[in-house]
Length: 192
Length: 192
Image (cartoon, rainbow over the protein chains, first blue to last red):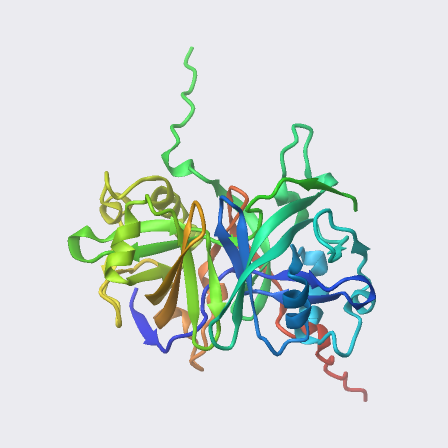
């Protein structure tokens, strides 16, 4: 268990790989973002870090709205495409065969094929260097109906979410525990 | 593909589940954090969002340093324990059988059993509500030697990283693509 000290780098893993929708109507665009996370639970806040020179940057900043669409294994080719191609050159919804879906609180479309979307309103923008951190309030969460069980609970395990780790996309594998499992008392075995 | 609009919530997934080390010497502590991500590539910056009432919060803020230790499936029970128990009551290194390892740039220990650590210096603190976002510069990256191949490349796929999704821990599953695969030309088949 010896380690070598490397120069500083953005080596956190795994991280999400989400498809961010921005703009509205015919000019709506999709960009894929791995520099995202939850910033606060109450009120619920997220962020995306975006290079200011990206085509989507002014679309997000001018409208003050965007949506974070979660990515499944089925969507991973589209997600990769939306991360490497620019909306300056191609209509990514059309090129990827994706469907615009109305959001409830914002004017940007959601991606119908994504199982879950966070509707976001920009809170503040923090320039950090290559990327600006765009902090946002989560205004609504849109959940694919088939992922909600009879008791009204969300079962995200059903949809094959994808993650990103150091240049590779991975499907989320088997469950290895629930929050709190390490301190939970085992159910006592009944003895005769 | 119909969706139901839910009330706002912190429903991004999958997210990392990392073990943050803070403090120094005998009083060093570990807390597990899912609200983390990369904030900027150049200069490399990350963040952790922490509730100010947590035992580790002043340890991080007063020293201005912490380390982000990546979590594998083997470490998941310890990670869960360090997320639900407080350093006020228990020495988590001892309770989990984890080993302190010296960092190269900061005074907080790393977790020897973790495959990769980010050594971090606090840049600024942004109060957001239940959580303060602690933005930090990544001062060094420490990589387990067995993950570096003969060409000096990091192969993170070998170590069985874990992720967190809506209350469940998962092992990272099979690779389903590399960054850029959707636009790469296929190698031309040789014909006789």
